[in-house]
Image (cartoon, rainbow, N blue to C red; front, side, top):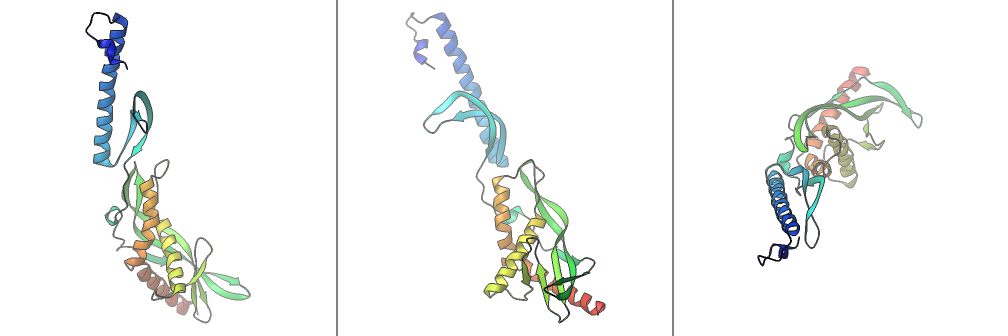
Amino acid sequence: MDLSKLAANGTAEPDAVRRAFRDLRRLVRLGRMAEAALSRIREKGWADGKFPAAGHDRYKSLDVRSYYLEAVRTPTRDMVPAFADLTVSLGKPITGSHGGTEFKEVPLWLSGTGFAQLNREVVPRQVGERLGSLRLKKDGGITYESKQSKVVKLYSEFKSEKSLQSASAFADDFTAALGGCDDASPSQLYNDLMEQVPEWLIGEGHVRRLCLEARDAARVLGVMSS
């Protein structure tokens, strides 16, 4: 917009003056739209609709496009539930075999309070999801086959490299069961949370607690089935 068209020297053409005033009014309107968007982002963390588009070096004040704006938010622990109510349970066992060795294969289920993305917000939700399967061997050994077909042992402590690999397999399956997205696509914040939650599950002892629950339930089932 050329503000020189508004020069009060008696030389400005009427059409040029009208265009200048029209552009000024448009700038005011775009400014209000931008202010509303910033207010929404500060309050909710996101905004959608039509807003002024800005280039790297200057505002394209007359270029309006519809797109999604989302403030950069770092995942924090209080965005998801405490996970204290999480519990595991066993499904109906079947007979399986691997490498000529027979075992009882038992589906493992997770229930409790998880989280979901709804309308671009992270909210609590109740879950009751099947995880992988426990394998109960005749010699008393118990392993877990994750949903990614990774077979690991159940440990009471997670200190060695192999035990930490086991914890990671459980944490990944727990996180996949706990999370959910009810929107058309997940936000960056939701994706970041899905990356962070396994560390919280392990670090706060939830994986260890649930693994011990699963192991104890499997041992009881093994005794009852023998």
